[in-house]
Every structure is written in C-alpha cells, then in structure tokens.
Image 1 (cartoon, rainbow, N blue to C red):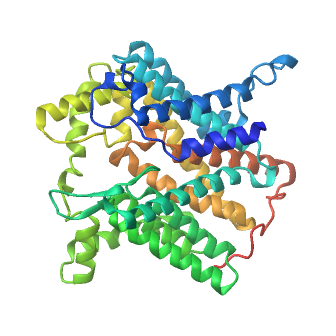
Image 2 (image 1 turned 30 degrees about the horizontal axis):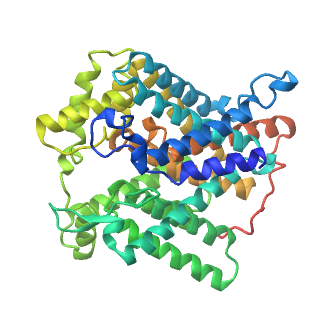
Length: 445
C-alpha cells in the first residue's frame, strides 16, 4: 500500500464518521473497563488509531535518510496554521483537564485530521491543489446519503425519530453523520456538477433529480442552519455569475430577508407552511432552542479560568451534564463554538481559533476576487464562501468550528493552500496560470 493510498483510506474512514461518544452518559464510560465490549467505542478507537499510524508513517519516513520529521506545508499556511496551533493548545490542555484521557483522545483526533488532510493536499498536482480532498469528501458523503436514503425506505426509524414535542418525523442521520449534512453536501455537489460538468441532457436531468431528492431529506432533517445554507448554495452556485463583495452582501441580505418574510407573513400560506415545518414550528426561536441559556451557563464557568480554560472537550461535557441535571433541559452540546472554545481552552486557545476564522474569510474573499480566470478557482471560491457562512453560523449555533469538524479542517486547509498557490503564481507571472481556464468543461453562467 502506497503512502497516498494509506492517507486516502484514513481520510475516508475519518470522513465516514464512525459513531462518536455522545450518548449522554458519564465521561468515564468512554474509557471504562467495558469499552472494548461496546462496538461503537471500539470502531472509533480503531479508526483513529489507524489514521494516527498513517500520519506517523508519513511524518517519519524521511528519518532513515536523516531528513527529520516531515510536517506538512499545508498545515503551516495561513488559516490552517493558526487552526493547527489551536489544536496544539487543545492537546496541551490535557495537563489541567479534569478528565485528561477524554481530552487527550478528542484533541488528538483534531490534530490527526489536520495532518491527514494536509498531507493529502501537499500531494495534489499544483494546478488542482485541494481538489482531490474535496472530491474524496463529496464521495464519502454521497455514499452516506445513499445509505441514508436506502435505510429510510427500509425503516424510517433507522435514520430518524419522531419528535415527541412536535409529533413530526426528524431525519437525525445514520451511520455516517446526521441532521441533513449528507443531503446538504450531496446537493451542493449536484449543483456544481450541473453548472460545470453536465453537458448532455440526461446528465443535467440526473443532476436535477439528485438535487431534488437531497432537498426532500434536507427538509426532513428540520435543521434550520442546514436549510439556510442549502438555500444559500442554490443562489451562489445555481444562479449567480461572478461574485463580488457587493453581490455577496446583497445575496446574504436577500436570503435572510426571504426567510424572515416566510417567518412573519402568515398571509402567504405556502411560505408560512414551509417555514413552520423547516423551523420545527418556530420552536424556541427566542432562545435559539436553548442556546442562549447554555451560553450564559458556560460563560459563567469560563470566568473561573478565563486564560487557559478547563480542558478541551471534557469541561463543557461535564458542565452540560450538570446543566441537564439542574434544569431538566436535554441539551447534549454547547451549541456555540465561541463559548465552547472559551470554556475549554480559555482566551489563549480561543484567540488562535478566532484568528484562523478571520484569516479564512480573508482567504476566501481573495479566492473569489481571482476566480474569473480559472473555473477550478471559481468552484473552490463558491464552495468556500458557502461553508464560511456556515462556519460563521457555527459560532453561535453549533460546535463544528471549535470541535475540529472534518469539513471545517478541509475548508481551512484548502483555502489556505489555494491562496498560497495563487500568490506564488502571481508573483512569478503576474497571472493565474498554470491554472487551466476550463479544466472541467464549460461554465454555465
């Protein structure tokens, strides 16, 4: 098995999302005496152990020749560099964590994922840097979506549940991920294929059908953030020509205003019905489904150790267990990357994370401003813009940016590497080349 194959297999295993430790139990269950008897825990440990072995082999392969440990260039560039530093701080927080083994495992996962993605990007051809990783991510999520669809028709409860407070069915996911993420990414891939690749009528029809099916399952997920990003993706990839700062701002305002219109104009029955369904009957919108209450509780904990925090992963988990016991609200995560990072790694770690986030926006805008001369760069720029909006929402709605989500890591490594390549070519030639203008077929504007 070649080094690249080893990395690809590791990436596919990580991206497929083996069952994670969030069953609501106590922290010591994760590494208790019965861990090997639990297949979910065993699969998780084996997958990440294999990925760690792959990273170790790649990093040390030059030692016999006296070249030292090879740290990937892509992890030392732009926003990816600062996110790598954030991961290192998370790993160091094991020292003061109240559950060091728990912190060590989850911090190691983040660092391993960064290294796997970075090593793969470093092996891409110069004119398509980052492209192979994006394709691999789409393929894995497309397989996950196909499994979700098949499982739904076999038995809907395999991939979802009926919400007791609303009585409606909610797609919560299956083996691969959950809450509409497979449908969202597969739908965006179908839009990219339709705009840049599909030339024959049957290819276009197939892409439209796949996209329509992804929306059915995206709506069934009842995940408001994913539905918003899905609408944004439709506008950015499906309808818009060349993006500019003014167009991006106008588009974000338009999508947001459209959703607000659907939320408040009850005279338009179709819009209102769609909104009531997609927002779970506008459930707890005043507190963002309890997120503001959780933030208040966690920020009070952060003030006890504002500089270094209380330990990555474990401290917010323990705090939420206590929060559930005190309030009775069943909230399984911090639901906000901002306060999660502050509680877990304090101002020191959160600063690295926010610098990475800010730089990623800067890099994304730079890619968009150069997208006119290369289709490949245009695709990367549009996808990066969509997922940076999603990352911005995660600061106050979910934990993905602070948790080291693989999609976040791929986004940061790719935008940083593409920017590095664009800068290098620009300095040498004053133009985009050697990026081909149309490497994947004509653009349909």
